[in-house]
Structures are given as C-alpha cells and as structure tokens.
Image 1: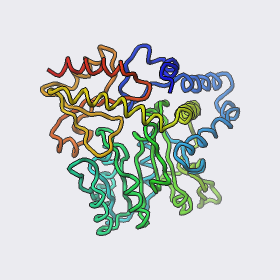
Image 2: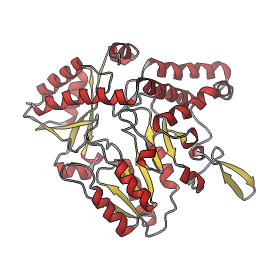
Image 3: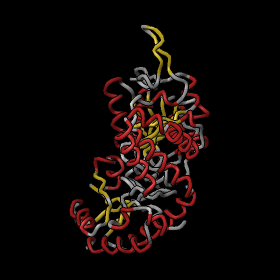
Image 4: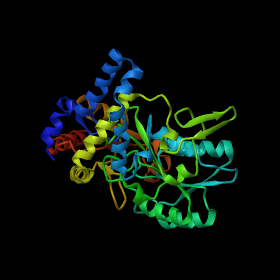
Length: 392
C-alpha cells in the first residue's frame, strides 16, 4: 500500500488530520472527479440524457458492490443512506401483531428508534439479547431467545457506531439460517474497513453507506437483498415505478431483483461517485485495508492506555477501527473544538446515541476516533499529544 500516493490523491490530507472516518471519510480524487464530472455533463447535456450516456458506468456500481460483498449485481440496490436501506428492508417484513424482533443492546440508535416505532404503532415486541461482560452480544442468549420466542426478525449491527467492537454476525447468521428466520444486518460501519461476505453472514439484508470507510459521497447508500427475499416477492411498503410494473388498474408486479427497493429517481452523480469509491477500495483490497487499520488503531489504543486521565471504552474479542474514550471532568464540546482548532477531526458520541451501552459504561459522552488506512503514524502521534494536553 503506497500511503504517499493514496494521500496525494486525497486533497483533504493537505489541510486536515482526519480521524472521523466513521462519520465521513475524506474522498479521494477519483470519487470527486466522478461526481463533479457528471454534474458538469448534466449541466451541458441534460439530466436524463447524461444518465443514458453513462449507462455502462452506472451499471458498474452494482457490479462493484456485488464484488465487495460476494453476491450478484441483482442483489444490490442503491439508496440514499444506510438508515434508508435499513428502513426499506424493515418495511417489507410481514409483521403481525404479537410478532417479535430480536436484537442486541449495542444496535445503532436509528435502528433502535425504528424498532420502537414498530412497537408503538403495531405492538411488535422487542427482545434484546444480553451482552457479554467481555463485550458484544451473547450468542447463546440470542439462541435461547430464538428458540423461546421464534422472532419474526433478527437484527444485528455489525460494527456499532459508538463502540469499538465487531459483533459475531456470522455466528448469529448460522443460527438464523438453521431456523429460517429473517436476518437484517447493519453494515454501515463495517463495509470498507473489514471484509464483509454476505454468503458467510447468511443475511437476508445488509444495509450500508458510502460516506464512511468506503470514502464515497454523503447521500449515498446501498442495500443487499438475498435471493430468498426476491423470490418471496417481499417488497418495501411504498414501492414505486422503479420497483414494480403497473399491469392493470388495480394490480402491479414487483421486479425480480433488488432494485425493487430503489426509487425511480436516483442522484446519478452520487451513483457514479459511489462506483468510483467502491472500485478504489476493491483495487486496494479490503484485507490490506484491515491490516493497515489494525496497526493504526493499536497505536492509538496503546497511547490511550498509557494515559491515566483517559478511559478506553472499547471492549470485545474483536475490535474495529472505531475507538471510544472518556475524559475525566471535561466537556464534550471543549475537547472536540480544541482538536478542531488544531485541524484534527474527530467526533463525539453522546449518551442518547448509545443509551444502553453508555449507561453500562457510566459515561455521558465519548470521544470517537476512527483511523483509516490513509492516516499516518505521525498523525497518530500528533493526535495523542493533542489529547494528552486535554486530559489533565
């Protein structure tokens, strides 16, 4: 991995030390060029006509995403975000009053809110599996709850946004597959930083975004949809002309691929930017990215361990490129702004973002640091020195 070349292709590296890749990564030049180039083409050619000219490249998005996840292009839908993907998947599950959803305490806030909304409106029961003292969901407790309650849906966030862990999605997927349970995985933070293989996970859906570790644009996401879901003709609640054909006055037929979950109107500049981001990651190699990220994260975590005024909050057998730490007697805004004044980008997770997890950890907020492969060892040193000056 040629770090100098990768950084030269990343304009943001010239002015920022960017450790907020779990929020939105710095885009590389091929991504920027794909987006701005298509905007310019639309301006001089027309929106519909520009999309027609770029049909092959647009199709390349689906091919690249399929390569990334180990599936077929027909299993991929483009959406506006991971949360939008998640909601579309959730809306197609044939829930009935009294059904249950099984999840983990660490699941992402927007997913938790969606489940609570279902509970409020349709009296769906929420089951939360216990967490292990060492971190992560207790798979044995998930198995017990599956066999006791036979949930309509099992859902798990692969890499929680406000915790450093990697959840055992493959183990849970095997349990769901054996019991023929619908399985929805949030891959928002995992795709782009670690290998994600939907065949090994055995999921029916996997939602993802482009802006985070894939280094793509904001406002772009994707949804993996299994052949089982496609063949069963499960569909989003509000399907449109992209997803179905109107075949008689009172009847429509859903299309038989994942684009059933898309809207007809797509931001094609972002689709092309997403293709460029996925191609960029595929060309580097996700396994190589994972190795590089692990090295950088070990540097950060070791530096935090050595500071008695900081509390590293990450627990779990497998840790990701998300590092969370607590400061004694410091305000979140003060720490964040102090780092930004030094051109160091991080982010803050508040208690309401991860209510159950943060209450167990007894913290109101955490600084979230998320290194990515284009960061340097020197940037890690600058970050740790800057944090040290705050943690006194």
